[in-house]
Image 1 (cartoon, rainbow, N blue to C red):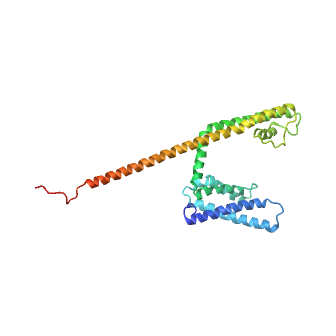
Image 2 (spheres, rainbow, N blue to C red):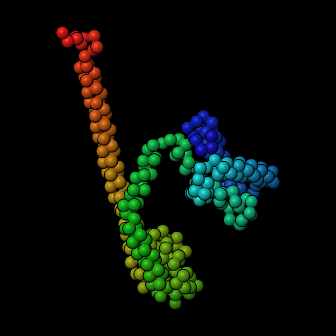
Image 3 (cartoon, one colour):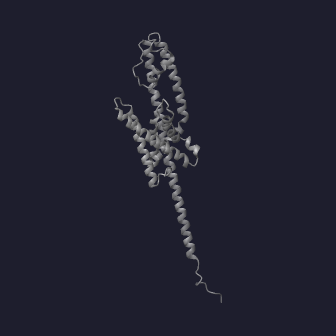
Length: 268
């Protein structure tokens, strides 16, 4: 029932767990609202305790029925399940209940949606095709991020020492400028700083467009590979079906050609 969702009991169990996950995320969101009354806080706290107990029982049960227990414990879903309930027992300062939202990815498995499985396989293949390019791009982006923070520091530190205090403080400006976000909390006021910012913005446009182009091209190539593989599989299945039909036809012809015992005349 816990591991198999192809049975009525398994589907009901998964449906209950997924519903509790959604409700627990909603409950966590409501807890952050100001002005909650005492009974509302108690209600949300009581529901959280109930959810944690259910999730704990489910987590222990999944470990119990898992064929490879350590593999499940250190798997993605196993770690998410553990981190979602552990702070409740250890009273960590960081609230990790929102990690339960990741467990909704199990819906793809529960609902048996083949198109999502094919899409995930294509994304995985696309990332594998451009893995080296992405690593190189991320490395260059890190270098540009550092160099731009150094540049704006030297341009603006003298004019705004309280804003561009150090190169480390300038990293935030570099990040929001290279990504073309521009919150406006840090901006240059000197002529050199403005010209430097203009150059960084042009580089930032390229930083956004390059990975988008790489991923789009890789996804297109992954789709072509998947379609070619599907065509090969269909041809193999058709050929196997044809060979089986020819074999059956040959067997029937051979059986029809065999003389019956009564039709054989004894030698004179």
